[in-house]
Length: 332
Image 1 (cartoon, one colour):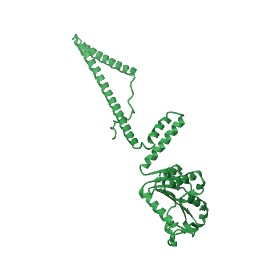
Image 2: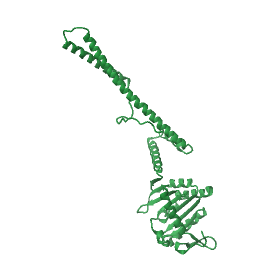
Image 3: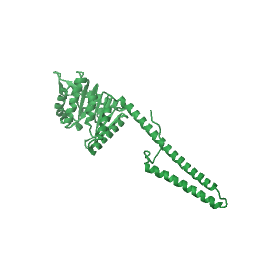
Image 4: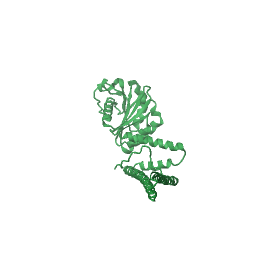
């Protein structure tokens, strides 16, 4: 339930508390104004009507001074009521926001949100300033990422290996990946690749998910360099195929070849390279209208790269099937 709408006070963020000295000064000012007004009235009555000597001049000056004093106190009281109203409304609004936030956090009690809030408050109250700034920046980054994900999409500069590991950990049924030699050149011998493959191996063994990886090379002769990588991943339980662009039919060669991974048939992880073939950005997307074309693209290329089986049941090193070669007798 949204909190109450506050009146606009553009020139203040909160009502300042008045000190005792300031209050005494204001009271003294009111008394002086009252005395001055009373004195002026008394002098005027004596100047304008000098022949009418009597107590009424004094009474009139006292009444005028009292009226002025009462008016000043009424104006001051009205200002204080306005300030009090603003403070009360602000406090109720803060309580409403806190209650709303607490209700939202309650929905995530099983996740790490309460733990994040608890430890974030501890971090920003201890250690050097640079630690506080670092913690604030990380919180802001995470908040911005969550805000982006409300639109079912998020983007980050470069290649985000943390996203890759987290998505692999969260996968429940399948991982379908396309890897190009432009992006993957040297990647599979790196430490992030080792952690990534280990996470996939654990997902296959523990959650029985299906992992399919399709390597795309420019020419058929380049696939020999991928043989050790393919064999290693097959031994880990990953289904691996290789397709050469020069063997694909024209309609499959059209379009931009980018690295992407589809998790559970619902979310894509896309790597975009710049003109220098450097990974410039990574996008995760859960919008069905953008994920479904990637799924269709993967299935078409996967079928095009279906491996012919040798008599001993092992993949034929030279057996790249293209869509122009007719059906695969092995039915892989």
